[in-house]
Image (cartoon, rainbow, N blue to C red; front, top):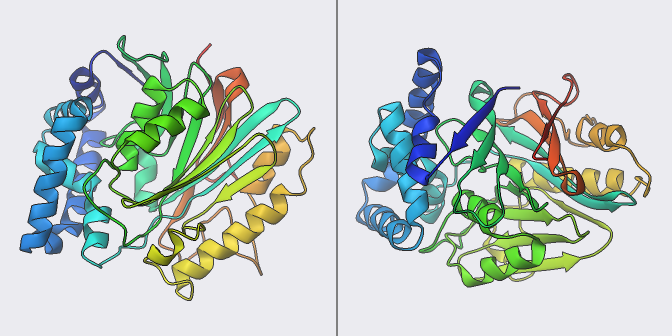
Length: 354
């Protein structure tokens, strides 16, 4: 697995992402162009342009480091910063115009074993993302909680999939198509801010409650002290569940009474059925784990295939998403095991902060 080191202030870290072979920079520009094009129809409307401008202004006022990082990435890859920003927000812009683009999956499981908490995530996205996938090792001297390891893709926020900091806070997201969007920050940017400035789950939950959110997606969090939490992110409201034992699972729909009515993918749709099916399978398999289960036991859960139930390790058509990695975070050990590719077919590598 390729690790990328990003060190310094936000603009410098963004610029350093482009320190890669010319062929890879070309793949990044192509990927950003495709994502940007998905927002084109929305941006032809007055409401779409107004929302995009408001989100850009909000980022500059309230999350200046994130905007500086986007500008650094754009400079490095030879892109217009606004185009990169729009590519990163294309899904939300489409959903805000009632034009959801179903492509992402992802399954996350958090649990507490005798040895401590474990957080796992299958990253389910279009397969053309795999050549851009990296483990980002980041450090900014202004961060409260030390260096960060993040899973993401070149040309994107470096913790847009998952991450862990030296304090032992780990988090992972899933995409949820929602109708509850508004002026606020996307979870991709929020995730890095949480890891930069929060030492544990409770600090992260306090920051989440104080933040204005764009809406869409879930977070599962775990820390070295043994706390787990789930957060369902809407703009108008958030649903938070904190616990010190048991298992938490999230896929690609909201479960809380306050947010499930805003799910933009009907339960009867193909994406809706798949998300609910994976949730049931992951819960059932996770319930068979014991306090002494091993890393291999947990990885076998994420490598599970159907039929008749939906695959957790997804690489069979007609799904638009496929599993391109598995990350298992060990907060007590300040690191993660990473399967770069299908967890049913590749071996993991260890990435640690200590």
